[in-house]
Image 1: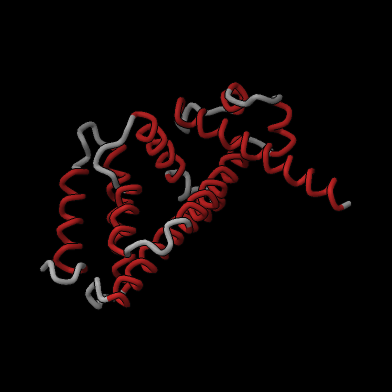
Image 2: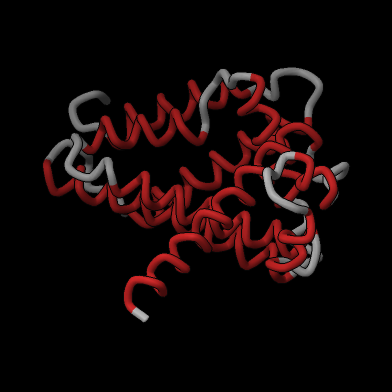
Length: 205
């Protein structure tokens, strides 16, 4: 069972990754409201029946997609360990609350906020977004705690500051995709940067 079982596991991982990529492409192109299994299948190199072999339907697939995105995000975040805390914090904020987004990222961000909109009515979606928020909050807190230990940051409460950053980031994401103008993103990000300079970064107040 040794070699054959490892091969089977690898093949299963490859299939899941291909399904997740197809889901990403379909979400970016169509958004949640217009997403169907057929549109995901159109982006998938293999048969539509394989999607139904792994998932009961669109929502079951999307819940796993959210899980996959979290796994991917946490794996990438681990690669930044060891960098200067301020560099890591600002890189993270640029990733989750950038002022400018390219067209593909903007479309995907809008689709993710559509998915978040399902959370009040669906426990499975709510569980996944709770986990996404937990991961980001804990990443903020860990960076802040490290910066305090290094003497680069003021002695704030890492958990409270992380919660504030998470709430601000989520507000920026929602404003960006639910308004006809620019959502005030540039102004919000500038104010967030000013907060960090006056409340967190040592020697800049």
